[in-house]
Image 1: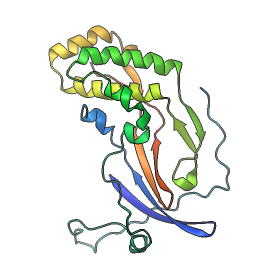
Image 2: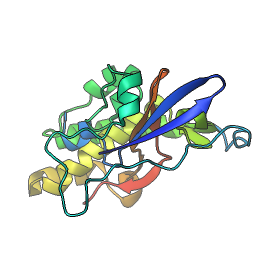
Image 3: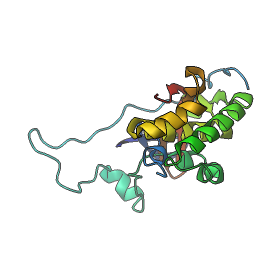
Image 4: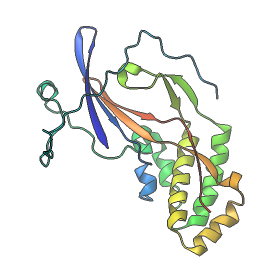
Length: 217
């Protein structure tokens, strides 16, 4: 994960934006337990996020172990700030789905997980998310996709099952093939998550738009 620091003047106060992005798949999945169309863009008057500010060590010199990338001015203004250094997951993005995610069968029971995946996929098809104008001053995109709960749980189940199939034995793959009988059944939409720290306001989590994916055979 990389953490990017940026500062912005909003009204009469100065808010420091710490933009942190994560493009890795949901850690919960990789660890195996580990309606409507687009809306208009946010008003053009909403300020955009300034270019990232990076701090690099002198040429040829590696950064010392444990070196902070937090700007000194930000440290002074917000001495208690601690950046998030773990991957952003579906539960960071929406903790309310924790019960449904926890109830998913283990990846070790691939056939049951495949059944749960199909069940949640049907719910996601019946209850899709939608695009909404994003608060760009808080690090959001101009249009933010807001997934439904069913889409999030489907994606988590799909990511877990995909990971299991990539490393599974012949018996597990055969059991899943009996449930997911064709390419259509194996397809799903997945999401990546990121966060933005707005010092003085809070930490905000965002989802990527849905990304086409498929359970390997």
